[in-house]
Structure formats: C-alpha cells, structure tokens
Length: 515
Image (tube, rainbow, N blue to C red; front, side, top):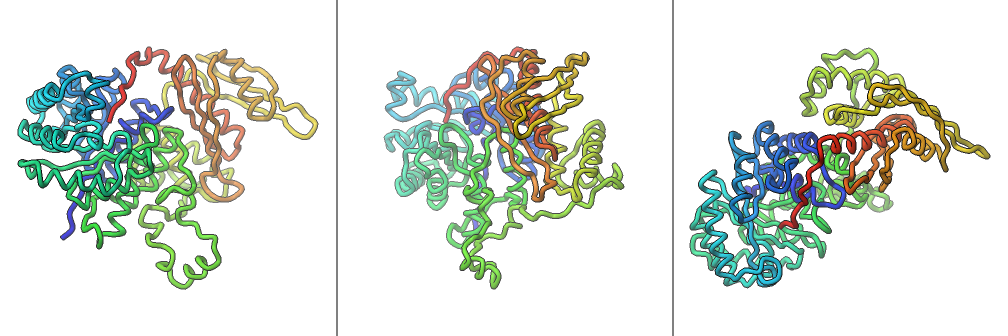
C-alpha cells in the first residue's frame, strides 16, 4: 500500500535564509501561488515575529493563497506565537510552527537553560499555540545531536500538550542516513503517544545528505518532509523538494510512498525561484539542472534512440520540460493572450495584461517564435513590478575594436528627464557607470549573470544582478533580445527596489538563526 507523504515547503522562510536570497512581499506571494499550483501541502510563509516585512508576507500569503495550509514559524516564546496568530488569523487553513532546542550543546551554550526548563517551556508554548489554532507543529531543534532518551521525552510531552506534528530537524546536517532512520524508528518504539502525531523531518545539506536522510526517515515512518525548491536555504541549503518528490515517484516500488505534487509544475517553479532569488541552479543539479536530461556519450545516445528507458529513469515531460511552441505573435489578440497565460497558471490584472501584451508585441517584431518561457519571464516581471522612481527611456551604446566603450543614457527620474554620456571598460560597464552617475547611487554590484531563456540567436537574454547598499541587497532582473538593454533594465530594477525599501524604512529586525 502506498503512503502519501506531506510536503512542507519552507522556501519562503528557510530558503530566504540563503545569503543574498531575500524576497519582498510581492515576490513571496508570487512564489506561494506557484507552490499552490505545484500542490504542496503546507507553505511556511515566514517568521512573523522577525520583522514587519515577514509579518506582512505571512499575512498576505495566508489571505491570498488558496489550497495549502499556511504556516508561520515562532520561537517558543509567547510574543512570537501571538505575532504568528496575528498574521494568520482569518485564513481558512493555518498552522503555527514553534521550536526550541533539545541538544545539550544548544541548551548549554545558546539558550543557557536546563533540560527541565526547556521541556516545561516547550509544553507551555505548544499549549499557547493550541489556544489559537488546532494545527500546531513542534520542532526540537538540533534533534540529530540530542540525547535520544531526552528527545523522546520532549516529543511525548508536546504531543500530549496538543502538537499534531512533531518535526525532527537535522539542523546542522550532521546525521547519516542510517542513524537518522534509526532515530525516527525510535519515535514509534519509544514515544508512547506517537500515533497521535505526524512525524516530520527537516534536513540540512552540510554534508550533502539532506535528501538521503529525508528518504531514510520516510522508510522508517516519517509522514512529512520539510524541503525547499532547488534545495536553497541556510549554509549549504535544505533537502531539495524536487529530488525528494521525484525520488519517491520514480522508486514508488521501493519506498511504497508518494506525494500529491503535480510534478509537471516542477521546472516552472524552479525557474521562478531561481529568477526571484538570483540563485542560479548548477547545471549538474539533479532533476532541474540544465544537464539533468542531457546526453553526450555516444553509447548513451545510441541507447536512447533505441529505447528511452535505457538511460532515462524519468521523462523530461514529467517535470514540465516539454518546450511547446507558443503560437503568439503580432496578429494575436489580448483575449487569446490572457487565456494562454491563465493556462500557464497566471491570473494577471488588466494593467499587467496590457503592459505584458505590449512587450510581447514588441518581442514578436524581434524574433520569429515566442515560447512559453518568454511569456513567463515577461508576465512575472510585470506582476512583480514595484513603483519605479527611475525609468529607462533610451539607451545608445558604442563599442568595438580600438574604441572606448561609450553609453548615452536617457532616464526619467521622479518624472524628470535626464540625459548623460559616459564610458567604461565594456558596453555594460559603460551603461552601468553612466546610470550610477545619473542616479548618484552608492550601491555596489555584487553579482552579474546572463542566460538565454530559449535557444537560437534571436533568444531573449535574461540578466540578473545583485546590488548592495547600506547593508541591504536587492536582486534585479531584465530580459530582452538585446543583452545590453536587458543589463540596463536589470540594474535599474535593482536600484528601484533599493529605493523602494529605503522609502519603506526597511525592517530593522535581523533574522534569527533558525532550524
């Protein structure tokens, strides 16, 4: 009999703890809606107490995203739990996830409390959360380095107090699959009331074992796994959602378990998270890497031509990698355009449709065929658009052999047209230096990356940049068939985000090191 495993996605919370992967509220809502289309069971939308921004993200996701249970993290402190409830209340399916360490090393050096105090606080805070919601999850942080006897005592107590899910974090990625599986088995054997709660696991990837540990736990009875898209997260990241899901789906015969994930949405979700966070997926990444379904060996190619299953244990179509042609061009109408976007899972407003449609029309004049990937980039940029203080009006660049690269840029800054010419080491550098001088930004360019959205010499190029100013980082994106123009758009997109956050007086609270 096949067991159904719950997928608890923490891309918006733990995934955001990846250095430089911060997301604004609008971007979090966009990802959450795609996670709902993917079919995850629970979305951990943030840590409501940590900052006003996280509170608003949890609140908006809870109000706007239908389908999954929406969860907020909370330390085992009453003020955290109160704040989580304030963000979640009014939504139909919500969960409070509270945590406290159980390892002696954490209790002694970080929390400076005894085992008895930790047990008492864990029980009290689970009871506090249950006074607000029926669905409460408790995590004994650093479970894999805890004394098993004490760990099982805490689990029994919090289940008795009302925790419907108990989550075992391998917080520092210390465990091996064999010992982690035994730890999970021990819950069923040693925790008297374990049958009243779902056993969950949350594995980090410091030794590259997060997915292996999660799958070992499933074999020993775990009913929920906590994971992220593309495996992003604190330090070396978390267990990768796509690897766990496809591992179970492909080897259902072995694990006797599956999930409710709509795997055809995996590739799209991976691209969206990569685009918004600016974290590029390595080419050899399992499932979603560019090389995951690429075959160069002559022996492999020969086998594939004769029978796909010789060298492919999964079909690329199963994760949504079919590149279907989008019959969309200069003669297409708005109604057909809107309908196709809705088929792709987007529900844009009339203003977003109009802006995106104009861009598609211009793109149709530049390239012969428009693909779904082109549409996804355009519509996601329009949906995520913030109020722009600086807009690009014109850009002219000269560069070549024995010529100093020169850029002439015309910007609209707070409604005022400004034009300036500058030079640089290359055409992109010239454009960036000129824009920096015109906007008087003090930001630093941390990263710059370019990739083709589709194949062909007329493909759109997508540029991602990361800027830092005053301790805040912003990720900017731009797409165009002209890579210099795409670069300028990405740079301005990041500058506008920095200006927007500055005007909102960006959250002073710092994120806390979490599970």
